[in-house]
Length: 381
Image (tube, rainbow, N blue to C red; front, side, top):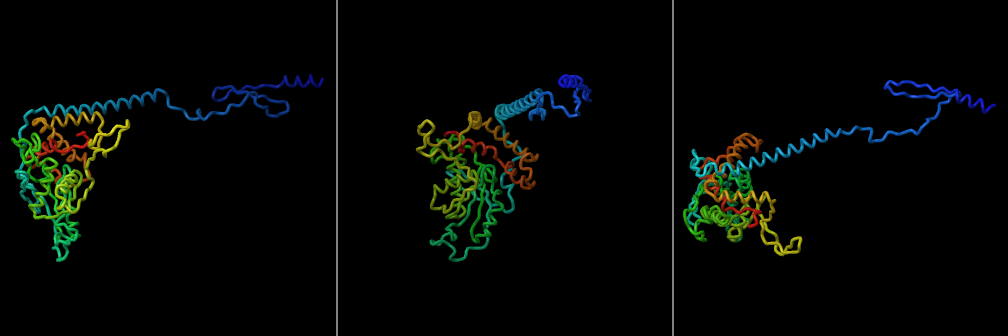
C-alpha cells in the first residue's frame, strides 16, 4: 500500500508551463515535499566563442575588396606617373631650347660671396665660395714644419652633397672659425651646383687623360676625377698648402678622391653621412660557394628598379630627352617645396636659398652632364 500511494503521489505531480517574455516555454516541476527538483537534463555551459559575435562573412569580403581596390589604384597611379615622367615628357619636345630668364651666377651672389677662377685641364671654372676666419695665428701655433695650425693644416675645406651648395655649411663655418683662430674655414659650390659656373659639354676630343672630355658629351669637370682635381685646383688658387677636407653625402667621395690623389696636402679627412658605395670584399663567396664578382657598387636593386635605372641612363645619354628629364625632375622638386609638400618646416628664406641656383645660367646643362658622367652605386659597373 505504501508503494502504491508513493506512485500515485508521483503521478499527481503537476508540471506547469509558463511562457517567458521571449516567447520560449519554460517548465517547472512542483514536488509534494516542496523541494526544488533537480534538472531533468545535463546543463550546457556557454562557450567563449559564442560570447562575442564575429563579423559577418559579407563584411570581411567587403574589407578585402576595398584593400585590393586601393592597392590596384595605387599601382595604376604609380605606373601612370612613371609613364608620364619617363616616356611622355622626355620625348614631348625632341629639341628643347634654352630656358628663359636665367642669369649669370654672379648676379645671384650674397654680399659675402667670393669668386675665383681655376683651370681644370683647359676648362675655366669660376668657383663660388665663402670663407670665415677669426683672428690670426699666433707665432708658434704651427706644426713642427712651421706650416699650418697646430694640426698641420691651413684651412678646413667643406664639400657639399647632391643638390647642395656652400649654404649647407652656413652655421658650421663661423663656429669652427671661432674655435680655431687663424684657421681659414671655406665652403665652395661644386659644379653643377650652387653659383659656380657650369662648363658646356666638349665639342670634340678623344677622351684621353689630357682632354677636357671625360666621356661622350661630358666635360671632365663633372666626372669623379674632375671633381677631385677641381678641389685641389681651388686650394692652389686660394694659397692653401695643406687642408682638412670635410665631405658631406656625395661630397665625401670627392674629398676622399682628392686625399688619395694628393695625400701630402690632405692632413685630415672627415666624412659626414658619406655616400660612398663599396663593392664586395675580395675573396667572398656566394651561396653556391663561387667567388663573388669584385665591385658591384654595394647595392643590389630589385629588377624593376634596375630596368628603370637602365632606362634613365639611356634618356640622359640623349641631348633632347635628357634635358627634358632633368628639367622635369627639378621642376617637380621645386613645386613640392613651394607648395609645402616637402620641407614644409623650413623657413621661406632657407627654401629660397636652396632654390636660387635654378635661376643660374646652364644649371640644366651642367646637371645633365653630371648624370652622364657621375658615379652611380648599384649599377654593377
